[in-house]
Image (cartoon, rainbow, N blue to C red; front, side, top):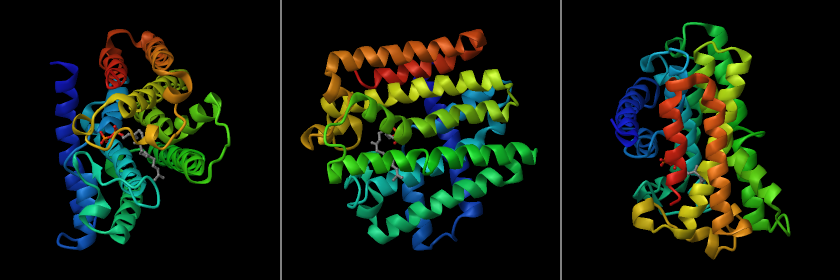
Amino acid sequence: MTFMQRLGAAAGLIEQRLSELLAECGPEKGERLADAMEHALLGGGKRFRPFLVVETARLFDVVPDKAMDAGAAFECVHCYSLAHDDLPAMDDDDLRRGRPTVHKAFDEWTAILAGDALLTLAFEIMSRQGTHPDAAVRSELTRLLAHAAGGRGMVLGQMLDLAADKRGEPAAPTIGHVQRLQALKTGALLAAACEAGAVLGGATGEMRAAVRRYGEHLGLAFQIADDLLDAEGDAETVGKATGKDHAAGKATLVSLLGIEAARARLEDAVRGAERELAPFGDKAATLIEAARFTASRGH
Ligand code: GRG
Protein backbone atom coordinates (compact mmCIF):
# COMPACT_ATOMS: atom_id res chain seq x y z
CA MET A 1 0.00 0.00 0.00
CA THR A 2 1.34 3.45 -0.87
CA PHE A 3 1.29 6.21 1.72
CA MET A 4 -1.56 7.99 -0.10
CA GLN A 5 -3.63 4.80 -0.10
CA ARG A 6 -2.98 4.35 3.60
CA LEU A 7 -3.95 7.96 4.34
CA GLY A 8 -7.07 7.59 2.19
CA ALA A 9 -8.10 4.35 3.91
CA ALA A 10 -7.63 5.92 7.36
CA ALA A 11 -9.64 8.97 6.25
CA GLY A 12 -12.53 6.68 5.27
CA LEU A 13 -12.56 5.04 8.71
CA ILE A 14 -12.28 8.38 10.48
CA GLU A 15 -15.08 9.86 8.38
CA GLN A 16 -17.29 6.92 9.37
CA ARG A 17 -16.50 7.38 13.07
CA LEU A 18 -17.07 11.14 12.88
CA SER A 19 -20.45 10.52 11.34
CA GLU A 20 -21.38 8.07 14.14
CA LEU A 21 -20.17 10.44 16.87
CA LEU A 22 -22.08 13.36 15.35
CA ALA A 23 -25.24 11.23 15.30
CA GLU A 24 -24.67 10.07 18.91
CA CYS A 25 -23.65 13.38 20.50
CA GLY A 26 -24.69 16.11 18.05
CA PRO A 27 -28.05 17.81 17.50
CA GLU A 28 -31.00 15.77 16.21
CA LYS A 29 -30.95 15.03 12.49
CA GLY A 30 -33.02 17.54 10.57
CA GLU A 31 -31.96 20.48 12.78
CA ARG A 32 -30.28 23.26 10.78
CA LEU A 33 -27.39 23.11 13.26
CA ALA A 34 -26.89 19.38 12.58
CA ASP A 35 -26.79 20.04 8.82
CA ALA A 36 -24.24 22.84 9.20
CA MET A 37 -22.05 20.76 11.54
CA GLU A 38 -22.20 17.91 9.06
CA HIS A 39 -21.21 20.26 6.23
CA ALA A 40 -18.21 21.47 8.25
CA LEU A 41 -17.16 18.06 9.54
CA LEU A 42 -17.94 15.48 6.87
CA GLY A 43 -17.27 15.08 3.18
CA GLY A 44 -13.67 15.98 2.56
CA GLY A 45 -10.32 16.75 4.08
CA LYS A 46 -7.26 14.62 4.51
CA ARG A 47 -8.08 13.80 8.16
CA PHE A 48 -4.39 14.32 8.80
CA ARG A 49 -4.66 15.09 12.53
CA PRO A 50 -6.60 11.90 13.39
CA PHE A 51 -4.19 9.99 11.14
CA LEU A 52 -1.31 11.33 13.25
CA VAL A 53 -3.06 10.31 16.49
CA VAL A 54 -3.63 6.80 15.15
CA GLU A 55 -0.11 6.39 13.76
CA THR A 56 1.75 7.77 16.78
CA ALA A 57 -0.40 5.55 19.04
CA ARG A 58 0.63 2.60 16.86
CA LEU A 59 4.29 3.30 17.83
CA PHE A 60 3.22 2.23 21.32
CA ASP A 61 1.24 -0.81 20.12
CA VAL A 62 -2.19 0.80 20.39
CA VAL A 63 -4.51 -0.65 17.71
CA PRO A 64 -6.11 1.99 15.42
CA ASP A 65 -9.63 1.35 16.77
CA LYS A 66 -8.52 2.44 20.22
CA ALA A 67 -7.14 5.75 18.96
CA MET A 68 -10.01 6.65 16.65
CA ASP A 69 -12.13 8.69 19.07
CA ALA A 70 -9.21 10.78 20.32
CA GLY A 71 -8.38 11.43 16.65
CA ALA A 72 -11.99 12.39 15.96
CA ALA A 73 -11.86 14.95 18.78
CA PHE A 74 -8.84 16.60 17.12
CA GLU A 75 -10.65 16.67 13.77
CA CYS A 76 -13.68 18.39 15.36
CA VAL A 77 -11.43 21.17 16.64
CA HIS A 78 -9.73 21.43 13.25
CA CYS A 79 -13.06 21.66 11.39
CA TYR A 80 -14.40 24.29 13.79
CA SER A 81 -11.26 26.34 13.20
CA LEU A 82 -11.68 26.10 9.44
CA ALA A 83 -15.37 27.13 9.58
CA HIS A 84 -14.51 30.17 11.70
CA ASP A 85 -11.36 31.03 9.77
CA ASP A 86 -13.36 31.13 6.52
CA LEU A 87 -15.83 33.72 7.89
CA PRO A 88 -15.85 37.23 6.39
CA ALA A 89 -14.57 38.64 9.70
CA MET A 90 -11.48 36.43 9.48
CA ASP A 91 -10.02 35.08 6.23
CA ASP A 92 -13.20 35.52 4.14
CA ASP A 93 -13.13 32.46 1.90
CA ASP A 94 -15.88 31.04 -0.32
CA LEU A 95 -14.28 27.68 -1.01
CA ARG A 96 -13.00 24.98 1.33
CA ARG A 97 -12.20 21.36 0.48
CA GLY A 98 -13.50 22.13 -3.01
CA ARG A 99 -16.98 23.02 -1.66
CA PRO A 100 -18.69 26.21 -0.47
CA THR A 101 -17.54 27.26 2.99
CA VAL A 102 -20.08 26.85 5.82
CA HIS A 103 -21.24 30.49 5.79
CA LYS A 104 -21.69 30.32 2.00
CA ALA A 105 -23.68 27.08 2.15
CA PHE A 106 -25.70 28.41 5.15
CA ASP A 107 -25.06 31.88 6.58
CA GLU A 108 -22.65 33.57 8.98
CA TRP A 109 -24.51 33.05 12.23
CA THR A 110 -25.04 29.38 11.43
CA ALA A 111 -21.33 28.95 10.62
CA ILE A 112 -20.36 30.58 13.93
CA LEU A 113 -22.71 28.36 15.92
CA ALA A 114 -21.77 25.19 14.01
CA GLY A 115 -18.10 25.95 14.78
CA ASP A 116 -18.92 26.53 18.47
CA ALA A 117 -20.81 23.24 18.63
CA LEU A 118 -17.95 21.35 16.95
CA LEU A 119 -15.48 22.77 19.47
CA THR A 120 -17.57 21.61 22.42
CA LEU A 121 -18.31 18.29 20.71
CA ALA A 122 -14.54 17.68 20.61
CA PHE A 123 -14.32 17.84 24.39
CA GLU A 124 -17.40 15.70 24.88
CA ILE A 125 -15.84 13.03 22.66
CA MET A 126 -12.45 13.25 24.39
CA SER A 127 -13.99 12.81 27.84
CA ARG A 128 -16.20 9.83 26.95
CA GLN A 129 -15.22 6.50 28.44
CA GLY A 130 -14.88 4.97 24.96
CA THR A 131 -11.91 7.24 24.22
CA HIS A 132 -9.77 5.49 26.86
CA PRO A 133 -10.76 3.32 29.83
CA ASP A 134 -8.47 5.23 32.23
CA ALA A 135 -9.97 8.55 33.39
CA ALA A 136 -6.49 9.98 34.07
CA VAL A 137 -5.52 9.36 30.43
CA ARG A 138 -8.76 10.97 29.20
CA SER A 139 -8.13 13.95 31.43
CA GLU A 140 -4.58 14.37 30.10
CA LEU A 141 -5.82 14.10 26.49
CA THR A 142 -8.47 16.73 27.21
CA ARG A 143 -5.91 19.08 28.74
CA LEU A 144 -3.53 18.53 25.83
CA LEU A 145 -6.21 19.34 23.24
CA ALA A 146 -7.50 22.37 25.15
CA HIS A 147 -4.01 23.78 25.56
CA ALA A 148 -3.16 23.31 21.87
CA ALA A 149 -6.44 24.79 20.67
CA GLY A 150 -6.75 27.76 23.01
CA GLY A 151 -5.19 31.02 24.06
CA ARG A 152 -1.66 29.63 24.25
CA GLY A 153 -2.06 27.68 21.03
CA MET A 154 -4.13 27.89 17.86
CA VAL A 155 -6.38 30.79 18.89
CA LEU A 156 -3.35 32.90 19.88
CA GLY A 157 -1.72 32.06 16.54
CA GLN A 158 -4.87 33.11 14.70
CA MET A 159 -4.97 36.31 16.78
CA LEU A 160 -1.38 37.21 15.85
CA ASP A 161 -2.10 36.39 12.22
CA LEU A 162 -5.22 38.54 12.02
CA ALA A 163 -3.56 41.37 13.95
CA ALA A 164 -0.88 41.39 11.26
CA ASP A 165 -3.48 41.26 8.46
CA LYS A 166 -6.07 43.68 9.74
CA ARG A 167 -4.18 45.98 12.08
CA GLY A 168 -0.77 45.99 10.43
CA GLU A 169 0.95 44.63 13.57
CA PRO A 170 3.86 44.23 13.77
CA ALA A 171 4.99 46.94 11.37
CA ALA A 172 7.99 44.94 10.18
CA PRO A 173 7.39 41.23 10.75
CA THR A 174 10.51 39.19 11.39
CA ILE A 175 11.13 35.56 10.52
CA GLY A 176 10.98 34.80 14.27
CA HIS A 177 7.54 36.42 14.57
CA VAL A 178 6.12 34.58 11.56
CA GLN A 179 7.57 31.28 12.74
CA ARG A 180 6.07 31.70 16.23
CA LEU A 181 2.69 32.67 14.81
CA GLN A 182 2.65 29.64 12.53
CA ALA A 183 3.89 27.27 15.24
CA LEU A 184 0.86 28.36 17.27
CA LYS A 185 -1.75 28.61 14.53
CA THR A 186 -0.99 25.38 12.66
CA GLY A 187 1.76 23.60 14.56
CA ALA A 188 0.19 23.42 18.02
CA LEU A 189 -2.68 21.14 16.98
CA LEU A 190 -0.47 18.94 14.80
CA ALA A 191 2.13 18.52 17.55
CA ALA A 192 -0.56 17.80 20.14
CA ALA A 193 -2.16 15.21 17.83
CA CYS A 194 1.18 13.41 17.71
CA GLU A 195 1.64 13.70 21.47
CA ALA A 196 -1.89 12.36 22.01
CA GLY A 197 -0.88 9.07 20.38
CA ALA A 198 1.95 8.78 22.89
CA VAL A 199 -0.43 9.57 25.78
CA LEU A 200 -2.89 6.91 24.57
CA GLY A 201 0.00 4.45 24.47
CA GLY A 202 1.24 5.26 28.00
CA ALA A 203 4.63 6.42 26.64
CA THR A 204 7.50 7.39 28.93
CA GLY A 205 8.30 11.12 29.22
CA GLU A 206 11.30 10.79 26.92
CA MET A 207 9.42 8.97 24.15
CA ARG A 208 6.48 11.33 24.48
CA ALA A 209 8.78 14.34 24.13
CA ALA A 210 10.44 12.86 21.02
CA VAL A 211 7.05 12.27 19.38
CA ARG A 212 6.03 15.81 20.23
CA ARG A 213 9.21 17.23 18.68
CA TYR A 214 8.48 15.14 15.57
CA GLY A 215 5.06 16.85 15.47
CA GLU A 216 6.65 20.29 15.83
CA HIS A 217 8.95 19.69 12.87
CA LEU A 218 6.00 18.32 10.93
CA GLY A 219 3.95 21.42 11.77
CA LEU A 220 6.68 23.69 10.44
CA ALA A 221 6.97 21.62 7.26
CA PHE A 222 3.18 21.69 6.89
CA GLN A 223 2.99 25.45 7.12
CA ILE A 224 5.89 26.13 4.75
CA ALA A 225 4.35 23.68 2.26
CA ASP A 226 1.01 25.51 2.62
CA ASP A 227 2.72 28.86 1.98
CA LEU A 228 4.47 27.42 -1.08
CA LEU A 229 1.13 26.13 -2.36
CA ASP A 230 -0.40 29.57 -1.85
CA ALA A 231 2.47 31.12 -3.75
CA GLU A 232 2.64 28.57 -6.54
CA GLY A 233 -0.47 26.33 -6.59
CA ASP A 234 -3.75 26.78 -8.44
CA ALA A 235 -7.15 26.84 -6.74
CA GLU A 236 -8.46 23.75 -8.53
CA THR A 237 -5.74 21.41 -7.26
CA VAL A 238 -5.54 23.02 -3.81
CA GLY A 239 -9.34 23.08 -3.24
CA LYS A 240 -9.34 26.67 -1.98
CA ALA A 241 -8.28 30.09 -3.20
CA THR A 242 -4.53 30.54 -3.76
CA GLY A 243 -2.30 33.59 -4.17
CA LYS A 244 -4.22 35.28 -1.33
CA ASP A 245 -1.26 35.79 0.99
CA HIS A 246 0.83 37.20 -1.81
CA ALA A 247 -1.97 39.50 -3.03
CA ALA A 248 -2.54 40.74 0.54
CA GLY A 249 1.21 41.40 0.98
CA LYS A 250 1.14 39.01 3.92
CA ALA A 251 4.44 38.02 5.54
CA THR A 252 5.10 34.29 5.31
CA LEU A 253 8.33 32.34 5.48
CA VAL A 254 8.13 32.21 1.68
CA SER A 255 7.81 36.00 1.32
CA LEU A 256 10.51 36.68 3.94
CA LEU A 257 13.02 34.03 2.86
CA GLY A 258 12.23 33.54 -0.83
CA ILE A 259 11.12 30.29 -2.43
CA GLU A 260 14.50 28.56 -2.49
CA ALA A 261 15.41 29.27 1.14
CA ALA A 262 11.87 28.37 2.27
CA ARG A 263 12.21 25.07 0.47
CA ALA A 264 15.57 24.45 2.18
CA ARG A 265 13.95 25.15 5.55
CA LEU A 266 11.14 22.77 4.66
CA GLU A 267 13.65 20.03 3.94
CA ASP A 268 15.43 20.76 7.23
CA ALA A 269 12.15 20.35 9.07
CA VAL A 270 11.55 16.98 7.41
CA ARG A 271 15.05 15.82 8.40
CA GLY A 272 14.35 16.98 11.96
CA ALA A 273 11.11 14.98 12.00
CA GLU A 274 12.91 11.88 10.74
CA ARG A 275 15.67 12.27 13.35
CA GLU A 276 13.21 12.32 16.25
CA LEU A 277 11.67 9.01 15.20
CA ALA A 278 14.96 7.19 14.57
CA PRO A 279 14.73 5.36 17.95
CA PHE A 280 11.48 3.71 16.84
CA GLY A 281 13.14 2.01 13.84
CA ASP A 282 10.87 0.41 11.23
CA LYS A 283 7.78 1.06 13.32
CA ALA A 284 8.04 4.74 12.39
CA ALA A 285 8.12 4.17 8.60
CA THR A 286 4.58 5.50 8.01
CA LEU A 287 5.15 8.61 10.14
CA ILE A 288 8.38 9.32 8.27
CA GLU A 289 6.46 9.05 5.02
CA ALA A 290 3.87 11.40 6.53
CA ALA A 291 6.58 14.03 7.04
CA ARG A 292 7.77 13.60 3.45
CA PHE A 293 4.19 13.73 2.17
CA THR A 294 3.63 16.98 4.08
CA ALA A 295 6.64 18.54 2.43
CA SER A 296 5.76 17.28 -1.04
CA ARG A 297 2.45 19.21 -0.96
CA GLY A 298 4.52 22.35 -1.53
CA HIS A 299 6.18 21.08 -4.71
C1 GRG B 1 -10.45 30.33 13.84
C2 GRG B 1 -9.35 30.00 16.07
C3 GRG B 1 -9.30 29.86 14.64
C4 GRG B 1 -8.20 29.34 14.09
C5 GRG B 1 -8.02 29.08 12.67
C6 GRG B 1 -6.37 26.36 11.24
C7 GRG B 1 -6.58 27.81 11.18
C8 GRG B 1 -6.64 28.57 12.45
C9 GRG B 1 -6.76 28.44 10.02
C10 GRG B 1 -6.76 27.78 8.70
C11 GRG B 1 -6.06 28.67 7.74
C12 GRG B 1 -5.00 27.97 7.05
C13 GRG B 1 -5.20 27.78 5.58
C14 GRG B 1 -3.92 27.55 7.69
C15 GRG B 1 -2.82 26.87 7.04
C16 GRG B 1 -2.65 25.45 7.38
C17 GRG B 1 -3.92 24.69 7.49
C18 GRG B 1 -4.43 24.49 8.85
C19 GRG B 1 -4.48 24.17 6.40
C20 GRG B 1 -5.70 23.34 6.41
O1 GRG B 1 -5.45 22.08 6.97
P1 GRG B 1 -5.41 20.74 6.10
O2 GRG B 1 -4.52 20.91 4.91
O3 GRG B 1 -6.91 20.72 5.59
O4 GRG B 1 -5.11 19.59 7.00
P2 GRG B 1 -7.90 19.49 5.37
O5 GRG B 1 -9.00 20.10 4.54
O6 GRG B 1 -7.17 18.39 4.65
O7 GRG B 1 -8.37 19.08 6.73
